[in-house]
Length: 634
Image (cartoon, rainbow, N blue to C red; front, side):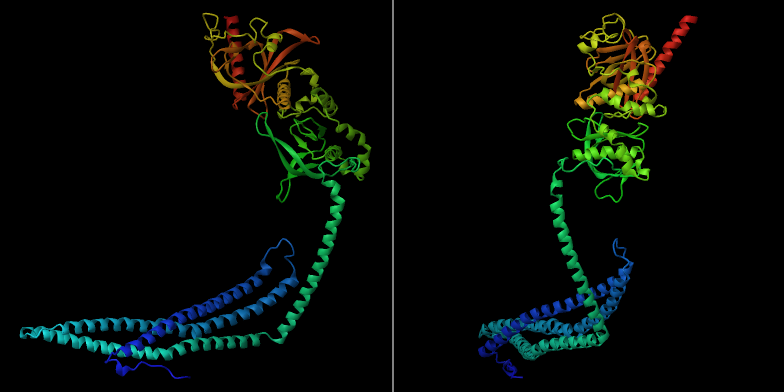
């Protein structure tokens, strides 16, 4: 160890400029040592923190390896070989974690403690003594300055004694402080070597101890185990590389083979339609109603499962039931501006769905498949052979029905072949069929190609029999200025006055007024016509129900738009599912078709008050009947 520079303590009292200059060098050296030790402390603290983090991470790794067998992996979670291998690794890593924990403790004691002591105790002592020495030196300089200014007069003896005492005290304090300061600076020259060597020595000793423990734990048996695991890893890697090559080749082959299928609507001559399918799956667009006549299309994955049509949204684990397609009916439909649309109606007519295929091939295959399933071909021993026999019926099923009349004719054989069912309500969607029509011919209710009136008052409505031209009947045009034309209101003596807000959907002539089925069928046809022709306008009115008549009143001007005499209202009903829809049949005084008296069915939409309106009309008829009976007998 070379010689160590020292401050001469015996020259502290002299306090010469040379001594002060030498003191400045030692102070500069102390500041440099303090700066370097701070950096070294930070570096060693990072080593210590990293070792603590490594110890904690190793322990966590061992813990996770132990818990592998408790994990519930969707794939390959019951691999016993993998579980036992990881358990063995866990034991080894747990021993290494113990070694790392011991190393962390040794670093704290042998490395961090010495350098922390030097930084927090010795260097701070130097700074404190420097401040105290600076204060004592300044006090001594001030006392000498006052002593030098003493006067020669006798009367200043007292002040002279005080100043002399002050000089004595300050000089003694400066001398003592300076000697201690010199001693601390000289000692620092030794301690700075110790402060750097001791932590490094402790670090190396801790590492040697750690590696010795590791050498004892990593025995030859462990090396053999690691060699076997390495061989297994290499085998898995080779198998993976081989599988990757096979998958890449498969991808290339599929890309070449599937190139024509990338077109959304492939050429049917190159890809013929399979009409003998009893199972089918793929994406379809389904029409969902959002309002009375508005709807949206949603794309979902559909598939058949036995006699059921299922749908499944992307990301769902399992599909949900859409419809039972045993004994159902399926047909092509013209739907707004979309192509390749077809409709499926359940066997009881209560549920129907309109779906859109992506291509003509899928469109025809879906219709053929559902036709095959509907006839329960999928339950036979040879479904494809039996499906081939009904190929002709499948070809007829994919022929679009451009009009209501053709659609009715295509449904009629299916309807007549089923047993008579109880009355059910119409679905109110385009192309939906009511099960109540199973025992009745559609032509017996509504004549084919019957015109539909979508406005309340127009020249067309005035020409209908029994409306504007029949006295006292509906269709009488009201005074445009709101004047009743008489001195007394026709209904001011009525016992019942109930007002409802309604919107007129349409009206059409009907043949029958004996069953609510005629109201349901009229609702279906009017809603279907509105959807097909994109008619969204509806006239809002106030419907006044009295014991004499039903009145449609303009809500703005309070002018009566139409008046329906109560005795002529022979039938009224609300939709069995959509309670906002209701309608009534008005018997007309003139006009016959096929020797039958025709009537007019009016369809309205309310604010979920269809049943209330029907109840109110029924109550009005009861009151009118009671009044008539009273007048007859009394």
